[in-house]
Image (cartoon, rainbow, N blue to C red; front, side, top):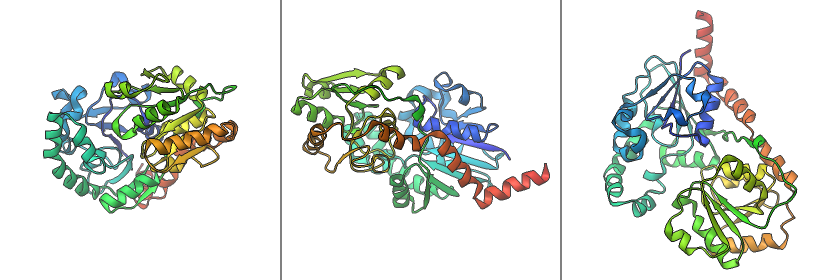
Length: 371
C-alpha cells in the first residue's frame, strides 16, 4: 500500500507538524507532499521522508507563501497523487483539496477549516495591510466555494477537537471523528513552587486576545510575562509597569516559565490549544475564556478556571477569584490530567480509527494477499 501524507506547508515545527510526525511513525515509508517547505526547519524524522513541493516553492513561496493564497488551489491540484492508495491530508488550510485516484482512500485530519475565509474573515480584513486586504477580498468568495467543494473529495474527516468537528459540520455539512492531537507532556515537570507572575505564551496574533490579559494585569497591578513574537507597539504602549514582553525565547526558557508561573492566562479562542496542556503538564493552572478547545482540556475547579465573557472585566474577575486561593488547585492533579493527552494515546486512537475503516481494511487485506 503506497501512502501519501499531504501537509499545507512545512516551514517550522509546531503542533500540526507534530501530528504529521505521528503519521510518519505509523507509515514509515510514506511520501510527503506540501505547498512549500523549508527543510532546514524540519525535524530529522520529517526530513527522512521523500518530500515533494508544489510550483509555489519555485516562485519564492518559501518566504512569501501566505501572500499566494489565490494560487494555492491550483498548486494543490497540480500535485500528482495518482500512484497512492491512501492519502492523509493534514489540514489547517486547503490541503484536503488534492486530487486523488478514484479508488484511493482519502482521510483528512482537520486542525481547522480555514479561519481567514470563514469565522475570522472580517477580522483579517480589518487588520490586514492594503495589499493583503485587496487580495483576500478578491479571493475569499472563490476560496469559500472551492473549500466546500473539495470537502467532498475526502472520504473520512478526523477533527482535532469537538469544537472543530462542529465547524466542519457547519461549513462542510460533514461528520468528523474527534481525536485530540498529541502533546509532548513528558517534557515538562513540576517545580517546588510558583513565582509571583502570570503568563501569556504563544505567537501573538489578534484572535488570541492577548490585549485582555495585558489590560487586566495592568489594572490589577499584577505581574504578567508575555512570551511570543508579534507584539505590536500599540500593545506594548498599553501595558503598565507590571507587564514584561520577552518576545521569542528558547524551549528551555519556555519550560521554565511554564512551571514557574502562577497561572496561564488564555483569553483567546483556539481550535484545540497545545500551550494550556503544556502548562498543565508543568503543574500550573489555566485561566481561560470558556469557549473553543479550552473547554475540552481545562477542567473547571480542578485544572483551572473559566471566564465567560471575552472582556477585560471578566478576566479580572476570574484572576481575582484565583488570587483569593491560588493553592486550591493541586499541581499533581493538574499534571495527571494533562498526561492523558500524551502522544502514545494519539497514535493508539489513530491506529484504531484507521483500522476500523472498511476501505482501509480492504486495501491492506488486498495488499497482503497479493504480496
